[in-house]
Image (cartoon, rainbow, N blue to C red; front, side):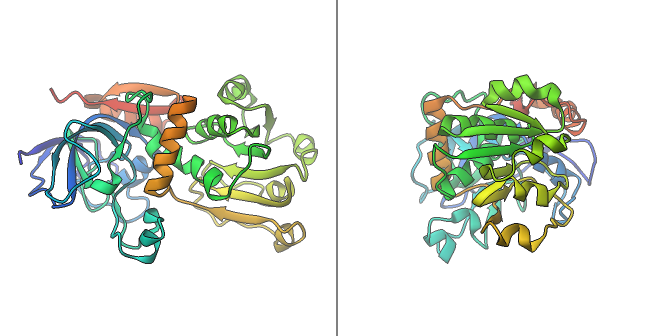
Length: 338
């Protein structure tokens, strides 16, 4: 196979530079995807800066890719040459451990992330095991669909995993890259949706995304009035919150589900759980089956992120835009290698 052009950082926090690499022989069960579009996620920034301690350099970011299959190993299946597919956080799993055999491939202990131990999708081509190359349904705009493959499944998964009913009252904490998609999915799911935000300046946008109600997290009286209301609260932000206050807002048997990567310990009183038989949980992205379900649901209901586009050659500007907190609400790079 020919060499692959990409954008890579030579060290932690460094700007991305033009980079070429030899991908080596295509694995027997791998597919190679010509990247058309790739979303940018906060995880790309965290990996770029080595916040989690396992980034290898040179580092090619990118794990929300949309493109067409251009090569297949002899044992690859499920897709065809020329077919448009998506690739998210995961590029490989063992397929023989208990989680994989149970359909939870995303919990595989040998899970291979798309941008750890291999080069990601800020590139003209990217590789993955065929299981994780997911056909894109008709009706989903390929220019906008990339962020669904990481951020989208992250907020969709709890609706599916915990059998949330259309009659449920759901609150979403945060109206950002994850939160705005959570509002859209919850509304399409049929739930009564409340958005919690630190900035009421986003109230109208939150309603446009699907919120029936918008509440300021700084309004103690408004929060107190919501005690015992919600069946599910999805926390999408990466900062510490009033955890006991959120648990108080849950109805008996309710669940607080954390998908925002909060770095500080999450602290709350045991009685906040015990007295109402409440739960706290978290999850990564989702299984291959869950992502297929999410993509089909998104196509039927036209659930898509609100995006800004940059050419991939402007990846550094796009990363700076995200780092500065200016993204509204997801960023997508359009491949322009020529």
